[in-house]
Length: 189
Image 1 (cartoon, rainbow, N blue to C red):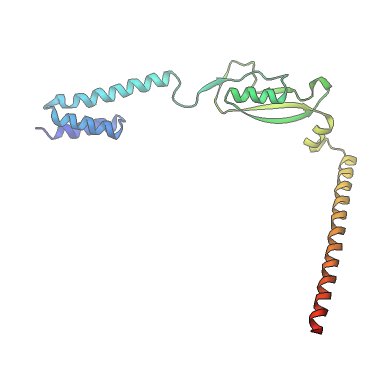
Image 2 (cartoon, rainbow, N blue to C red):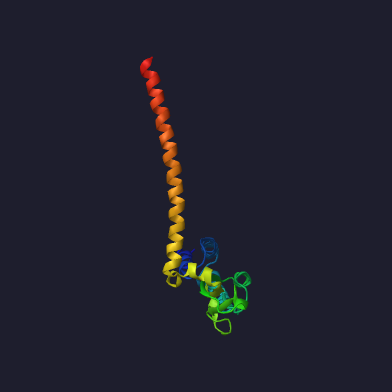
């Protein structure tokens, strides 16, 4: 029995990228077969693996699957998101003020375009630009908020804070009164 053949079969399997289980099986076969034919099972297994790898690469199995970006322009935001989810894509939304009430909540633009024939990997991000009412768009876009709108919002927040602080001060005063009354009762006893 030639002990170099099983060693050579093991090296062929390892270098050919076979799994450890397959490498053990091919090395065992090389122990049973005498002469140069002992390498045949290992060589055939490595070649079969290479052919299978080429076939799966041609079918797109290596790396992420590629998908066409659906055209969601003019769709309502929820519908556009569901369409992109169905295509296994992610999305990011930004908002603009609507120039027409008919456009409210609809996708104005998208990137990459849904009219392109270009394929993108699954999970790619599609940028959506959606029309919102002028008030909602103003809140979403700080640059569009006027100074008067900011002052009115700040005045409202200040009033709420003042009211809560006043209530807290009253509770604190009452707690201090109770504490002082409790201390007077303990010092007399």
